[in-house]
Length: 155
Image 1 (tube, rainbow, N blue to C red):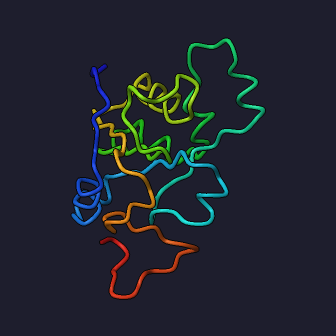
Image 2: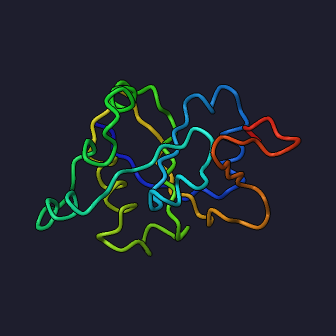
């Protein structure tokens, strides 16, 4: 097993990953924002992380939760375990640092599960250091699949 750490990633770093054709297909953005916020607007190809009241109650008293609870897509989990994903980007609505995450926050639970998960190849695990609605326009939020004018969808 490879020892991994969570690395901060700013919006320009995420933009570089998503613009590079070779890296974008090996990059996975896991969106920890509330599901309604994700449905309203999200990054192209980002995946929502599931966390509801039932899972929250089941997790009480445990040191961590299973990645299957948070990412129920079996095909996606298979890609992760085979080492096909080189860059895992965790997006949280607060956009803070790892040390600022509450122990019971969804982003912290997901990061802990990713760090515990065994994979065939090492992945870079990032926590996005920018808020989603960043005014600089570095992060493009796509609503219901619409692509902003003058954009290829991967800008």
